Length: 94
Image (cartoon, one colour):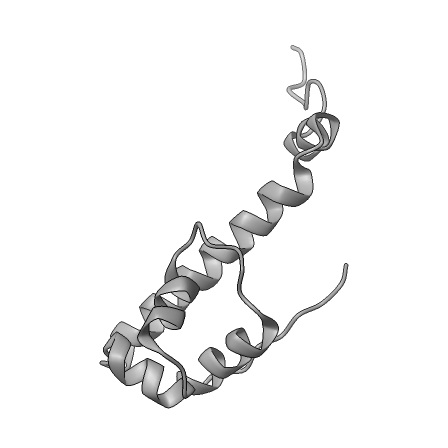
């Protein structure tokens, strides 16, 4: 019997070869953060208006943060959002 194993390169290698690895990775991270914030808002019974007020920002800024396709979010905004839902932001370079 043949042993099943990996054939070919990894998906990461494919993305790197196409030159889109960083873009795809950044978009995936942003989507995860947006989904986590949305879940924490529901868990804490927070509306967008309430969260924006806790973050001391506008509702429009919060909408940009929660939009998975909008990648123009600052670390400051992410940190304020994390604190507003009782969490902390942790970044690491790997």
